[in-house]
Length: 313
Length: 297
Image (tube, rainbow over all chains, first blue to last red; front, side):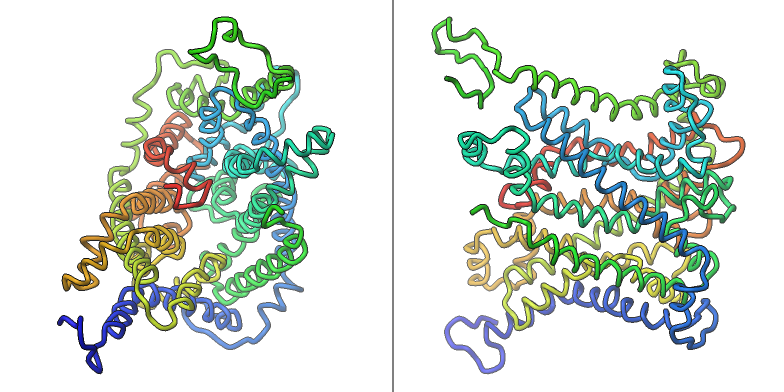
């Protein structure tokens, strides 16, 4: 139906455009309602019940009560998770930034190096974890072999409660290339004039770095920091595979690793919800994580975000 | 005094004397930086080398930890690994899911992106913001209720929970495609409208072909994300014959009589497809993701 000259009362061009618009975004909008909004609300609902896939009862805040008081393992899980986040993320940032600064010097073959450092990022986490389990093998892994060469007897790594989390962090640092390329881009976006101005003003190398470079890339730093923290709070794949390795393979549903040293929030949640089928409790854990992340993000935006330069003035 | 901002590359038309390279003033620093970079790169590469060499060793070599380079290389480890379990089935499972997910994602996201980029309707901006909200949610807060709902309709232990949601949009890709479509010239569409083509026809015949670079990015990213997905297959696929590759490989972890050569071979094979895709497209990706500007496509 052509409506070029005279707009009719019902089917004007803009009306038809609007209808088309709704139809085009329809699936996505429906998806938002079905797979995001509704489940979010339902999570809250289930967290107030003791649903176990068969029947349910309203229990009010009892799940949250248990979370905060009587659950013995939650403290361990939260502690381990925070350990990984608080130590792993800053280390990753320092390493990534340091490498980016080093690589930012017009060195021949920079693109090759950049690709090399980025390689671990493309490896599936499950495959990477299996590789590192072997690398950290106490008896015939590469790490302990190398330590042996310099006369150190390597620890049991993924079998020793004291070394499981450091091993996880080392494994995480292997993927430093992911953030490094972001910092590289940020550094290369800093106009030369800024550095030249600092040089003219007589700033030393470190001063220039601290007072010029870092503020210049603060948006990237802020981004990797936030996403790093949020990501490490939800770590699952690597820990699950490591726990499986320790517990003896498929069928063994134990989580937590040696001495519960690798019990993290998400594996605990997984166990509660999908092994013990305490869906109500698991939902409470999920809601709590969600609220925590929202609050943390809001807090970080307010406190740190104010110091992030969004424009160079 | 010379500023060394550029590489000391000889200029062809310069007189011979100017071709001698003068060391930059801070060459010591640069050399040190290069050493550190190379050391770091070796550290990054070492695990990959270990992966390949271990996958080609005999079990005795692996246990003895004295042998660095396997001789002769046990290529049969790869065959043995593949045949030790129905990996062809697992591969097929993974590819079925991939196929469904990619089709669903491309369709739903490009439709929504076009609607958001070009069509005007009341509430468009609100809807756009709403569709971006999932980017901020931790996935787990929607997973449990979804699992319960899928259970209620009897979809547990099928591929459906893994495929169907992708037909209903994905926040990140909708955003990506919309930004790209905003840069497309309007003249073609206007011509199409004047010619009486319906919006769907315009979308299919005009917009989609022009959006190919961004669509390629979506396909690759979604392929890799689905290939690496472990959690969703873990909770939804219970029968052994429905497992995906990453799920199946994890099943071999921790067993007492573990054949590390084969396990390494499996890990290498699991890494190959995403790695190949990455190398084929990396020129577009590292710069694309990094500058996060589709204008720089």
